[in-house]
Image (tube, protein in one colour):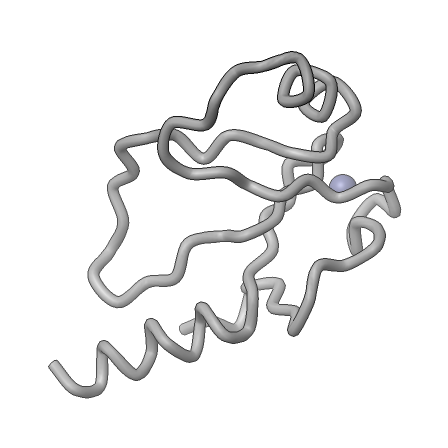
Length: 89
Ligand SMILES: [Zn+2]
């Protein structure tokens, strides 16, 4: 079921789809909107995941996103953890 997910052990240096660099880290929750944050948003180094995300139970959240083509990438650890939670249910 996770066949089409882009899963990486660590943050890819550039987007596997469009080769855009840098890849943004997705922040969840309510980050502080300071100058540093605004700058990183502008540079495409971070992206917002939203504060109220509806997810399927046991599904991992994407950890990184390409600011250009919006491709979402997952961290291997997150996916494995989600799968384990699903199995023990
Ligand atoms: Zn891309």
